[in-house]
Image (cartoon, rainbow over all chains, first blue to last red; front, side):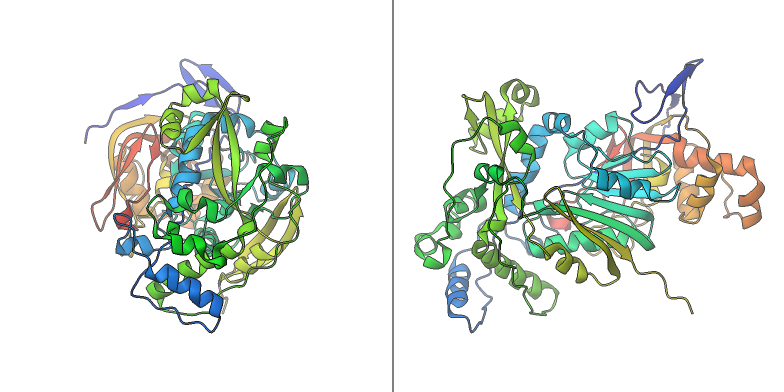
Length: 412
Length: 124
């Protein structure tokens, strides 16, 4: 191996002052950098024609049979595609690609530090190693200068923004963290899990957060709430319904067949789209508000072996997702034309229909996939994670939040 | 990528039960000074897999760490040791290179200091 060791001068540092002495930069604060990588993965509706779901619920059975009988999409299906760690199509198209395309613009709007998150980070002991899974533009990395942050995000363009700020970051998937267990003192997941499109993936992401912190370590999770404070924003969100199945699952998908489209089970109440208001940019950053209360989702009580459970779970989740459309949304992001040209990704996004132009606003409009959480949902999900306890729960600025503590080691 | 991060990274390819530590192929290593904080270094010591750190540091061109994990007395009072540990953990950066899975040989690239640990579809 040829090693090229040289002294480098860092030109800027976000969390410390620097002086130059004889060409070296000396960081005057305990300057730690965070690494964050998170990738949002699409969830694709999958079916396995060899599986038979039996259910005493007639409606569910009819839908299940329809799902079963459809042919499996070519290319996308492999044994690994059934894994909870596989990225579903909806996340690839409406989370990953969108954030990659909007990264610099998105980052420029993400600067306000949320007080509750700041308080959590500042409460941690000096010298803590804090893992931020889904760190985005690294807003919270280094927030507590006495701690060392390692962040990850699935979006390389966002990670590049973090890295340019001198933070310790890597590109990784929050559903499958490339970390050995028990290393972190604490972990955070801020506005991440709502981009995961199945319950099993959301649960897996929580399990990963717990796995990577030490026994007794804390985990803070925040997600967008279905119960939004500003109801006017609701009009800007597009609820996912059968109308969007084609975009969701892709053209030629079995889910887009006439049998599916005509089945009353799949016809969902659609909220009429309204003209986008002048508060567009603000709305982009805010969740949709004003939803009437959403019924709690029923959880599957089936306990099956690993792969089988995954298949069954994904089918049931797709059924549940369709039933509970009010929690599944496309939330627009308006990327101004002058920003879109810089990004470069927008040309292909427009060509493939992933984004649309809005000349009136002078912006390329992307849609981001969200599963917003209903009251109690995050808690129920977290309570199913074995070795952790919920130690705090709160609602703040249209987000549901919990703090978990990983079980301490048994002391004999 | 610093060695503090490397000491946590593990290959998570399906079927790999122990993908730690990743072997470092160092293409370009740079040094950046960071203020020395002995308390932090002591705190970190308990988390470290010592052999992985020593080997990783050697891969990055730094061979000053003792082969064997030092005992508590050293940690408490030997400042020169703590400074070496500080240097290894925080001041060495792998800018270009790869992290190699010990079981499968799969290489995770490191570019501009950023490791890409994403798996391919068939590795999940």
